[in-house]
Length: 528
Image 1 (cartoon, one colour):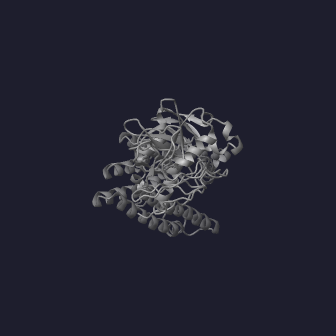
Image 2 (cartoon, one colour):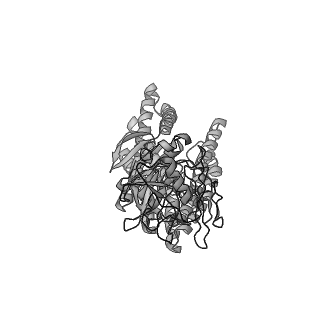
Image 3 (cartoon, rainbow, N blue to C red):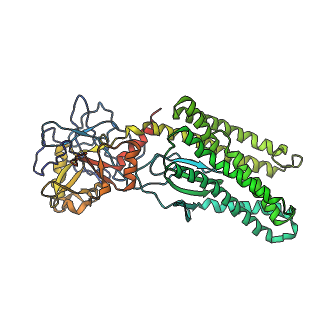
């Protein structure tokens, strides 16, 4: 829904529109609750609403009308405005002001690699082992953090730690593979070797957690919020919601993870010295030393989304002064690295360079090596591409401004029938309703989803107050907000609609989170 008052003064419920009244129409259930008309103007065309977008569930990929489409036929629907266009608002003064138009889902899918991601929010992620959790590259969304992500194990430094369901699959695989190796080294263990193997799997992922904690502590030191740590298939991920402000901090943030893995490898190596190699402690310490060394080396490879790729990005950023240039360079190196892993890993393993017996390689080993290489290559390739998408999104973030994404609104009193409120909104070309008291002070916002759920024949007997959500402090958004600051504000108080106000406290309009999401989709589609 959409309602803005550019002058800051909400209209009286009895005010009649002065420009281009639109014929009230009855939207179908799948249409938005309020229809709007556009007024032509040489400078800032008014947006009209997308008839296909239902409240809270924007259709990804929905296209908006171009700026030159300045009119909507009476009784017809138009699409949502592009970010950067302003919607003029009904007001009592002769000069209309502008606001744009937005919708809101109020929920957030966690991205997590995201990144995540979720949905909301610019996220920088660090992954271990194959940092192998894929960065999904989802656009930051004004949604609350979802509790999903697996089993909550607790909080470290105030950051929740989750174990994804995929970890249990990997733990079982490690237990089976390592158990087979133990049978050759310590055949006297018998079936107990699988308990030892399970302990190794848990200890290994504890090392991965230390790797991720290094990223987390560094991020917190730089005052970057961390949403969560997740242990998952092939490694872990620290979901850092903002990007480092300088290339130096970016380099440190990426380097501390592999550094801690190297330190752990050294500690396990020293612990091996006094222990009998052909014993359970000796085998476990050797396995942990080798695995942490592999984690460190693999993550130092200079390609996104690995830590080494973030370090390369920081170096190029420092040299060129452009974060985007660093991202492009590190992402393409990451793609080249993916191809090298796909081809080179099986060859190295068969040649015995990685410790295998080059003379005795079975067909099953060859298939396993190829499958592992394909998985790692796909993870790196996808992560590099997602890093490019996220960087492009960050470039367009400043275009997301509350003022240009705000819907025009008409104020109505609490006992106003819904049919009358819709008539006024359609006549004024508005797409949102603000419930006000007798003095014109805003009390609540009428939910678009609630309007759609009321049959047309019942609307004359339903008061708008029964369909409204009471305003809280977090639902009052400054018209001056933009970019990450706007997203952070919406994410702090999840809702479907927000009241947009001027710095003086005057009503400007209504901001819908679904419109913000649609603006993100468009930003992702535009080239850099």
